[in-house]
Length: 421
Image (cartoon, rainbow, N blue to C red):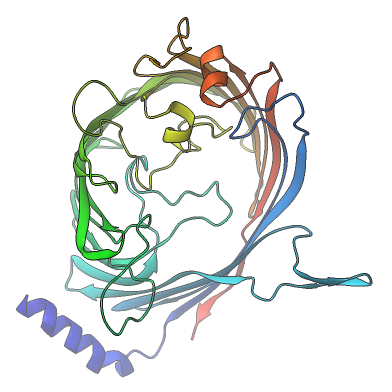
C-alpha cells in the first residue's frame, strides 16, 4: 500500500516533466438498417413488418503517457427521423441527443499495477456475465474503479462501483430495479497460445424499495477454461449463483456452456456447443440463473428472443444446442451460418398446457461480412425462427406467421489524428 501511495504522489508531482504525449482522435459511425417481423417477439396475424435505420456516432479522444492515460468518448444514438424538434418546413433536431459513453483516467502504479477510474467498459472472457454489449447501438459502459495487476502469465482485476440517482443531502434511496453496486474479482492464468484458465466472481446488489438500509446481494462465481490444441479450440465455463434476488428471495441457480471450434480445411471452419441455464423447479427459492450484464445477442440467436429470459421462458430455464460453420471466401469476404435448437429446462405445468413439450423452436442465422483494407466493416444478416406451440403459448401468440429478421450494418472507424503533443 505504501508503494502505491508513493507512486500516485510521484505521478501528480512529476507530470510537468513529461514534454510529449501521444494524442489520438478516433471516429466511429455505424448506421444499420433493419427489417423486423418477429425480432424479439413472435408476430401475430395482424402485425405489420417494421423497417427503420438507426445510427451510432461516436467521437473518442485518448491521451497516452508513460505514467497515465485518459480516454473520453461521446456518442449520439438515433433512429433516422426521430427528431423531436420539427415543423412543416424542416427537421431541426432534438433538445438533447449527445451522451457520455466513456470518460476514464488510467494511472500506472509500479511496473505491474494500474488503476482506472471513471466510466469504462468491462469485458471478460467470452462475455457471459460482463460484456460491452456491442450489438446494441448504445453499447454498455460502467461507472467504477478498476484495479489491475498483470504479468506475462497472470492477471488480477478488481472492479468496484457504487450508484446513486442524485447528489443526496440525506439518505441513499435508489431505483430498486437498477443495480446499486456491481463489484467483481477476475483471476487469469495463461498457459500457451490461446489456452488459459480464469475465475470470475461478481457481487450485484439491489436496494429494497423505499428502504435504503436493505440491499439484496447476489453472488455469481465460476471458472472459464479455453484450450487450443492443433486445429481445435475448446471453451467452457460453469457459474453458480446464490444469495438474494431483487425480490428478496433466496437464489440457488447455475449455468454452464461448452463450445468447440475446428478448422476443416484452410478456409472452412465448423463447430458447435451447448448452453444450459437453470430455471424454476420444485426446490425452494429462485432457481433461475441471471446472466447479469452478459452478452445475449452473440449467444442466444440474432433474433434476440432470449435477451429477457423471464419474458421468453417464464423462468423455466433454457437449453441452447447449436451448430455453426464459417467459410472464408477470401481475406475480405466471409459467410457464417448458425443453427440453434432451443428448449426449456423444465416442463410447462400450468392449466391448459397439457401436450406442450419443452421444445421452443429452431433458429437459423446467416451472416455475410466484408472487411475492407480501409477501416470499413460491412455485415448483412438474415435470420428465421420456427416456433413450436410451446413458444407461441409463452409469448401469448395464436397464429402461424413466419418470423424473420434482416439487417445491413456498415461500421466506419477512421483514426482522425495520431501524433505527439
